[in-house]
Image (cartoon, rainbow, N blue to C red; front, side, top):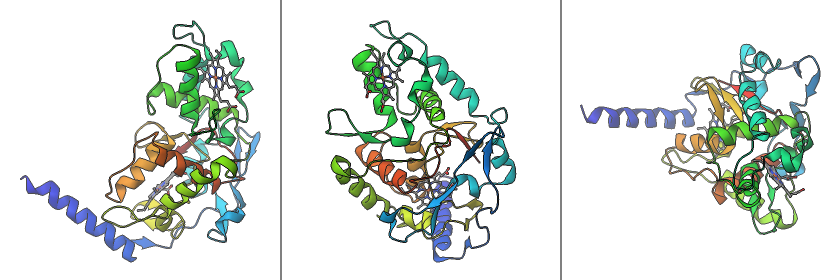
Length: 291
Ligand code: HEC
Ligand code: HEC
């Protein structure tokens, strides 16, 4: 009895290895053509953009994960009433106005309406105010909570944090992803790129092996996208909840049967910057819907 799970794991590993050898990856399901992502019949989002120069031809163009999803899943993202993520973004908006911590302040006390945060998500992650670190949106939020509100930091993948990042991302919906990768961000970007092309785990797979070499192909039941993060945080139908960027990275690294980095780690923040830069020009989608 005890051996069963181990055998199942070994079998799954062999299957995945076979997938890599080519037998389970089928080049049969390209991204959908000729459709536009228009939300509420009102906001047209850019789901295809010219590949940034730094990619050196590694991708023909950059594409939103939305293009790789089934019709029904794509449709949910086209109307805020059908988008299950909106409930969470609304909760984030409520938190924005909620007083917390020793200073008796809410986010709104200093920042005003949450609409004032338009543009912020498009430039994340970015160099910290002190200039010596790379911060994701989560770090900025927690910095305000701990140093300015006298409140406790939220966990990276806590509901509060995900709801807040959803509400904040929504304010930048439709703006092009535009992260700085030069100056003090350059070493972070280099580090992120290195991680992206490093083969991890028993399966010896790099991010690029799936999301660059095989986007558009099926890997077992999954339609591989370019692994872009312009739609994050995303609502996953499978888990009926939001998923952060770093949590998605964690899942992908784990799928290669490797030890993974922690959400919030320097490695994942560097990787986030690099992956964001691979999607320069795609629209921030606010909160998107995934299987
Ligand atoms: C006591 C005032 C104060 C409070 C309360 C406060 N912030 Fe801030 N926040 C600031 C200041 C000051 C900055 C840095 C100013 C700047 O970069 O323009 C900042 C920066 C930020 C940034 C980065 C903005 C950017 O342009 O990159 C985010 C995101 C943010 N705050 C979110 C929040 C959230 C979420 C809350 C509530 C949980 C909050 N803040 C509460 C004062 C505050
Ligand atoms: C074995 C193949 C494989 C590897 C290796 C892999 N992923 Fe993924 N990844 C997937 C699959 C399958 C999905 C779900 C379908 C999709 O969007 O591609 C996914 C989804 C994603 C998504 C969500 C995209 C969206 O639009 O919702 C991101 C982001 C991502 N991966 C990033 C990465 C990063 C970064 C790495 C390297 C640390 C990586 N992946 C390694 C298979 C892989």
